[in-house]
Image (cartoon, rainbow, N blue to C red; front, top):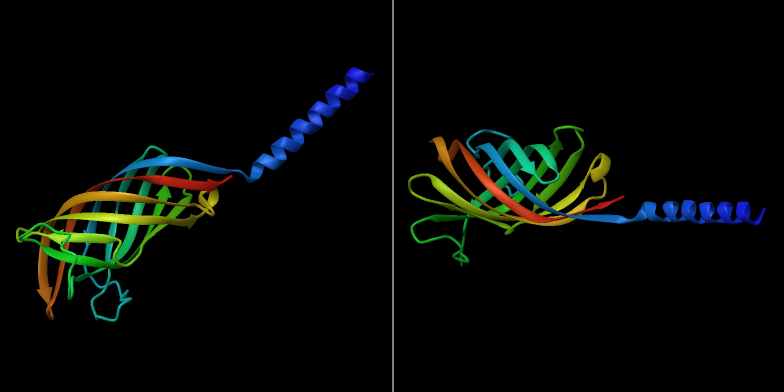
Length: 191
């Protein structure tokens, strides 16, 4: 009879331990490779968060990460560096600073979504005269759906790309092109 109470007691302790661990936080190191296309401000999105009459652009593509494969969409708004620029870009390029950006990664297998955003000044875009470019990015994870609900953390990325078509209308430059990026960071998910 004592063995039965001992077994029952151990079972209850393990059950309660399992319940209390359900509030744990899981942190993962993330490494992702982006392959995407973009439409820069010449394509009208009607998103103008800084009131300069130039619309935000749109990125979309695929992302392969150590945590899965995702479809990727992001709206972004840059402006030419004004005043005392931090001179983050190489000589001979034009520097653009980020106004804001918001993105969604949609998991290929589950359709769960992971949100991220870049704050003003968190990214720098360096455009060369031949319309190739480099950029750096610092983004934060900002929640999501399904397993990504309440997600937090951040990542840093470096990328390169090229405009494949470009032009101007009403003194607004626009274009279409491609880019690749490698990003690493930490993703924290409440269990």
